[in-house]
Image (tube, rainbow, N blue to C red):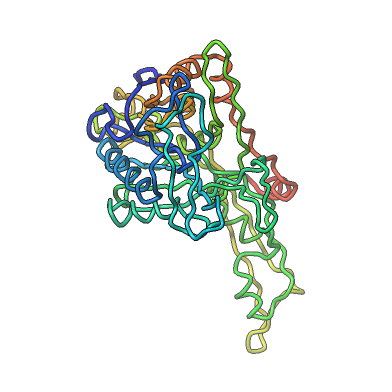
Length: 410
């Protein structure tokens, strides 16, 4: 039996999480970007918020302190995904940039700090990579991947002498080399095989054989559940409409689809109460066998003797049929995997985790945002939107021809 998943909203500090040690299976967050905007409660800027530090160095130090706290909460087998955007130095003709943090909110008063960026104007600060390198050098984390979030509907820019910024980084960190992953959940459909050569063509060409018919290398080497996701994810931003009665001014939330892929691929739906492991997907496979034979016109000469080439090649298809851990009995009690967002904001992470069978915890210092998140994680329309899984790409003509020509044998 598995306990029901849910979303929990907590007002708290990202640097002091109210959670036990090694309790989270996955941490996903998008910290406030440096010098971008002021977050408020009741229209008033509140002190000590991440992103309003006077310098980039102070901002990074604050983020690393938060990250150290997240590592306390993260299980050794867990993953941390952090989405960060960058910033340009600018605001004057001098060698150092000074500017306001975002747009001055009503009632901010003297608490609204200025930033000082000791870099030439117009220089990209490189904050995401500075943060990632510090996580490795100072915290000993393993950087497993950099994902590029490509935003096809990104905001326009007024610059005329550089490319428009249309992406952000998402870094994947782990505490140890072996960790929970279930990438079979997020594999993607293959494109049409680009090659028309058959397996072993190089050897056959060396043997003097030219045109050969048969299924391509790409088709034979296909994983039966699809290909691994690439490191560039093209996902449009998702506008959020907040009811007026909440009285909360909000900024863009990151899209549920961005979080959905991370949650399905790197957090368990079920954690076994017996062994403590997250259960991984198990698939059934059907073997596809095809025989290839070379026609007489494609024989090669070997010391004056004709030599036929024939061989068998196997491919397979599969589907996920269940989940298993180290225990021989997969009916042991289980609890939902725990997904935590220390900068919860509008509650996207907790909402997406809950509708996909995990327990999601969203934490934010702002009372306004906590109220907004509480509405969102319980609103039927928002839950339906977060559950709207994109349809897989259609099977291509090349794949249809391939699969129809093969015999399913088991």
